[in-house]
Length: 128
Ligand SMILES: [Zn+2]
Image (cartoon, rainbow, N blue to C red; front, side, top):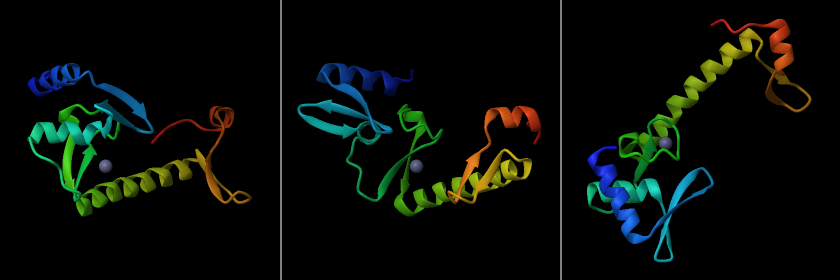
């Protein structure tokens, strides 16, 4: 744990705050206030309020990993680009999975699906 994380933990303990896991994010509750932990933590780290154009991105993509080293501030438009880059990687990866037969297009439901484990074990082996 780095110095900031230690200070943060002390602060949380001192406030009697609790960290709750709602939705995909951790929320921190104290004095009848509920805040998104990643934003609060960055504000404490910077010692200023974040504005609405400043989005906190979780570098390792785990929205509950609010270690300060995992958080980065991005302008809203830049944050969109970052997620756009993931979409692009995701699509390329899905193309690979499709080509290898791991996913298929279900024409009845009009969605992509992952083939069941038995089919994969019987017919395919993971080789990229
Ligand atoms: Zn993000």
